[in-house]
Length: 105
Image 1: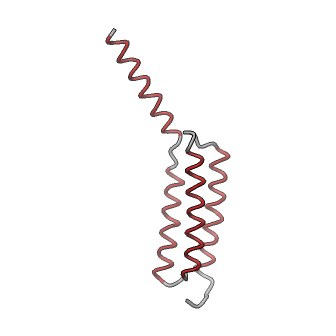
Image 2 (image 1 turned 120 degrees about the horizontal axis):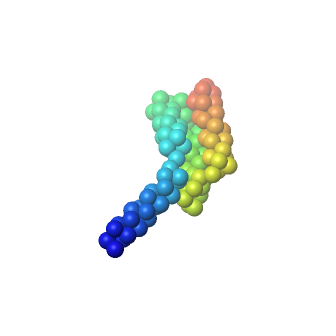
Image 3 (image 1 turned 30 degrees about the vertical axis):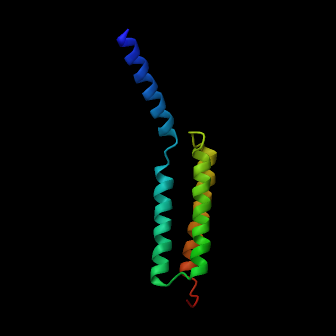
């Protein structure tokens, strides 16, 4: 009887860890951190003015919301990953353009 209980407990732990593993998004998280670092660097160097930084940070927040919504059911589908990646690509281009647009700060 003890063996059956331990087996059932182990199975439930494994099943729950699989569900959490599917919702992990390390690449998305790493890219978000990298883009936020680029924005912070642009502010510090004067390449981004306050308005540009606010707009870029709002875009980053939108991506974070997309990620949270995708993770809410425990599984991030390929379609959801593609949508997040597309938003990250767009924001990355915006960061690069704003940092190198030669506007006076």
